Length: 105
Image (cartoon, rainbow, N blue to C red):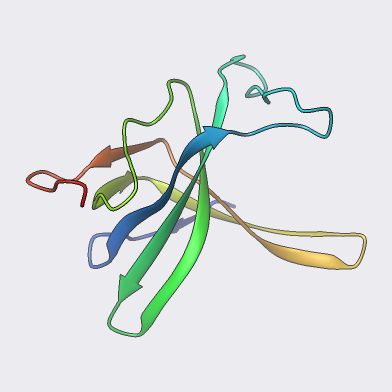
């Protein structure tokens, strides 16, 4: 089952520029099945209940977004995980794009 997060009523701001998503050996990860390079982008998500910093993984070209920019997130998927007594939620999206009319500060 895929869990999608509706980001339409949320303000999403880039808080750290996109970086390559690397494996334990320092090599950039690739998406299984497609071979597309993977990227990690840290964002701050704000809504009426408060804000939270999350990291979103994308695959393909490096997202054309930068710190301070309001962005649109296409199909944000949340995947719960647990391993070796640790757990959390991984976030993945099809794309991250600058929101129309927004500029980086």
